[in-house]
Image 1 (cartoon, one colour):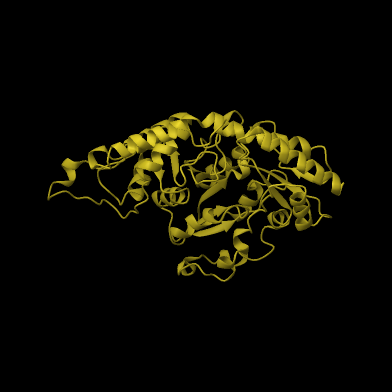
Image 2 (image 1 turned 60 degrees about the horizontal axis):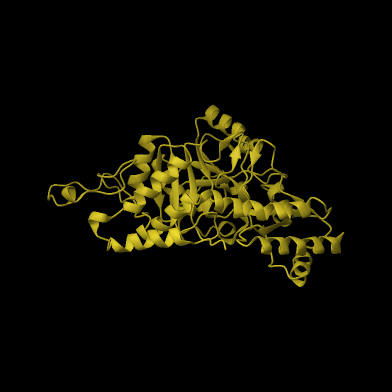
Length: 395
């Protein structure tokens, strides 16, 4: 029987506990995790964090993004992407998405670039990725930083390269619903040593003794009365050792964990492609989709709630809607940004209005997201069969 959390995870957790959380044994699993993850993606540096929002916040701070700056993000995703921008004091600006892939649109990004734009955060939504060549060209032409938010994409590819190896930095999440999990946690990877060091300092209270590949200050340093600890302002975003132990085991099992999701998604995909009721997320032939979820858009003539209820009536587990668009959430509509509303550039006034991203607005009301975290193949087959019955009912 396949177990999402198995013997390897338990073994590493016990090893971490046996270290008794002694300072001399601290960060052992953190360093092993960071090395294993960055190596798997073929990059030089990894910095683990408490979660996949802290990763992006740390990267933006390390890039010098702050008050008066704008960062272009998609609205069709979990709002934590925009939150990370707000945490720096900068302004998130929303670009529309592609109607077939659901990814941030390069054409819309171009229209949103201003003299205040400092960076772009792409989101590899549902296990796919945007047109990275087009995004990279925009970054190059406008001297912009690029962060890839890959919370939902592990081992997906674009033109033969792993998603997460294109930007200045790439963020991944180990939250409980993700391909790999330690309950909570995240990691950011980069090939730039200076950037990795700055991210580490943001992540680790600005400590002088940490660096791109060094996660912990030494006893010899901190025992001196003359030691200057804090080189800069920083946050305490370090990932706990127990979570690192679990995440390390998950990284060592990454292929099988991702493949389980892909196998489940393909069962839904086969059923959907034979119907005229749903249209699945488009994956170009030069991409591979890691299917954090199997997403599809519902025919305009079918009520979303009626469709979901019929799926439940046939014995389905239920499925999720897309998140409300970030700028349509009450916090943006009411400007309840914990005093960060005073930092917003004037460009945000129009951007946060209904109609700003019409493609995303149309999609959001029609999207259905089927779970792919079925660790038993029979369960996935059963749910796909229930979907087939549901689609037949509406055909």
